Length: 502
Image (cartoon, rainbow, N blue to C red):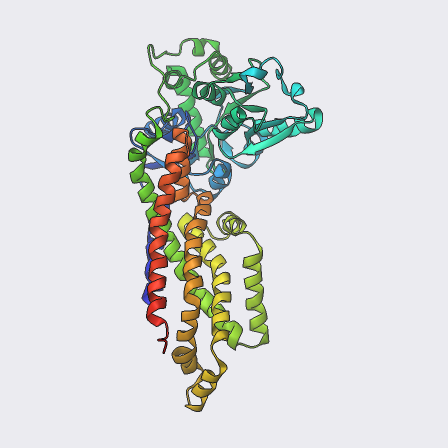
């Protein structure tokens, strides 16, 4: 029994140690591949690697630093927090230059200028020319961006309702479906959306101007100075321009930015990569069905992460839950009250909040690897639920059997181990299996801690191919393949333990 609990815990901790261990000669950089084209996205021909102009800039920085680049998947909304934790050396993923970032992080010089533009349905191009025309309407954008701040300000000024999304694909699909009336986002994203969807129009006037930057932990000033020098040289020798032209994002705004940073003479002398063709983003051009075979290995690897993490967290939850249940049944009043308080705290607060507190909130005290934080978050949360199952099962054992055990001279520990616990386990088996299946699904929440599990990998797949049909079916099939055998095992054990009928 003890080995069954310890083995999966050790496996997850070993994986965490491998992931978190600093490697010699490697530059770890963070980004979000979910709907991240053309910044960072899964390669359509090989989903195990990422491509995009920010990928090439990260590789440029690594190469000119004499290091090998290593990508770390981080949800876009968590990049700032992960940078402060030191989960990576630096991050690039269309990160905007805002005062709050410069106040709390090491931030590079701007390397790209973008425009916040308004996209509407083609039929509304004359009606909705600007934010002032959208009074009483819903406008979508990404959360935590300059565009979102602009929409929040416009809520009071123009009576607009700001709708926040976690990715840059679904705002435009919802616009076509009529769920929102406009989208305010960067011109790069708007141009990509119009290539992807017919029936959209982007107004030419910019609502605001912004810049993309590289970020790192605040103490990485020396690294950021090196990044600035590399970016400056790449602007001067034409390397950045060649990258932007390759990805089809070079425009008239960039020479102006380069001139401001380098001076007009240096910017005018920058080399141009002639004839470079824009790269094709992985937008499902070959069909999501064809892409499924390329993404399937990535989904299966993510499924292994989900299963291993769930098994380890469930082992922790079972061990801790049993201890809590026994303590609440057998201990004195004060320990019982403390254990009851723990159960109510963990059941009464969201598991997502608990994950954030363990991973980000405790980072200044103890810097837990992502896998360990995920294991603890799920295990500690589910231990509260497991303890209630076991406590009810212990109390369900007939009192007559406990009295018989005392008459036979069994000690309290012997009564628990030989009489009460075996029968309680039979009562608890079905709810335990149900909780494990629930944990398999709740493990999708750990993607906020940079753990790429099955649901996160499916989201990356779906947003990059532009459809949820095939990715959703594959994901559901894999989850069912993991959970159905558990139910079958539980039914067999119940049948074996069922008392014979006369």
